[in-house]
Length: 266
Image 1 (cartoon, one colour):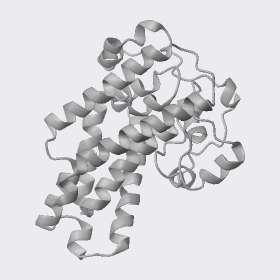
Image 2 (cartoon, helix red, strand yellow):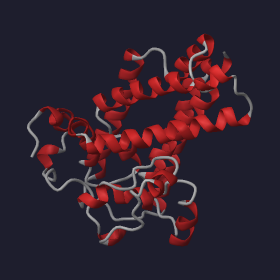
Image 3 (cartoon, helix red, strand yellow):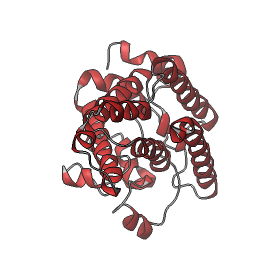
């Protein structure tokens, strides 16, 4: 299938394009003044990003799109069983997969074992485009397994899965970015997508704010399940990013953030 053969090139093309655009936007119009050394953070975050990508190719040679193709071939999943076709069969699975990721994100905050791995994402003391891919390898593996299970249950078209994967990666870089968006425009945009100002609240040092705004692509789930906070209590310029118990430099080296889940937590 042509789109499967070109999937890796499509995803890489979008990844590097969005990374470049958001990095340039952050330089031209930053939302906040960064408080830590950018070179060190970027090395750690990008090293983790590309290491995870290589690891996933080795562990899961069949990507989520390949699972969708397999589900279609064997007639697995709701859409394949019902024989649903047309534009709804493309769009609805994207929303269903996004809601799945929302619940996954919520569970990684609420379930202590999962939080031990997800907290690495929150130990970044600044938030910019590279934070969007700063995830522990164990969390990445669990996330892929959850997506594959849902793909088998839903039976979405291959196109839906590829579009969703591109959206998920792109929106993560967008909404973690330090890009300035005028407040009036932000209020309009966050009716349809998760904006940087909306998601930044999720990285606040305050627990109530950390446990809010779980969305990546679409903002509706947080409003629907009452986990939405409009603005941080200290304001975007005054809010502290990160976790209260992990602010020392010793916890922020590459080796330590990868091994942190396996040590006794504070």
